[in-house]
Image 1 (cartoon, rainbow, N blue to C red):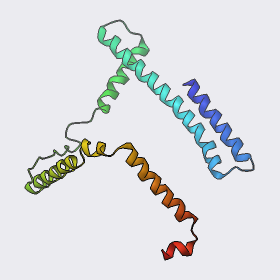
Image 2: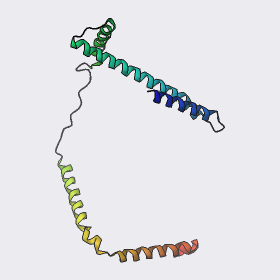
Image 3: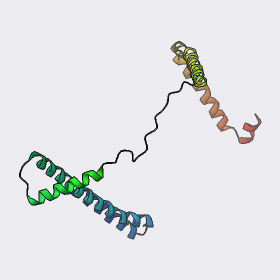
Image 4: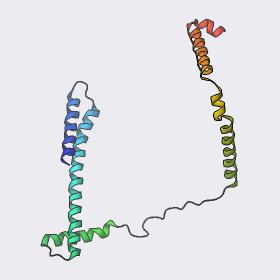
Length: 163
């Protein structure tokens, strides 16, 4: 928590320095004001977590039957009151809709069609077709393409459009 708070405050200072520089903008000012809020939230969240942990441990001690001090009793009573308000009463929220699985004949037929197309594509482009071309053929083809591209780039614009 200390590292987070100091980091946020250091970033706020840095943004403030950026705002005061010649290239500073309103965005830097906004960040300079925002980073201390993040630091404050880190402190708040940490203190809240510590308080909830303390209340939970006081409840555990109270359930075990160990003797308690006056502050522990007050904390456990307060925790007992707040636990009831943290739970969502049944029926308050609407039920989640359940997805129904209807068999749509049109969708089923379309999926079969797509599966057949995929199967045809796989057989048409099998590994035999790919390996049928030798590495020399591929190299020669790419060399021809690069030569044609160089020829096109070296021609003036009016010759390219004419032919």
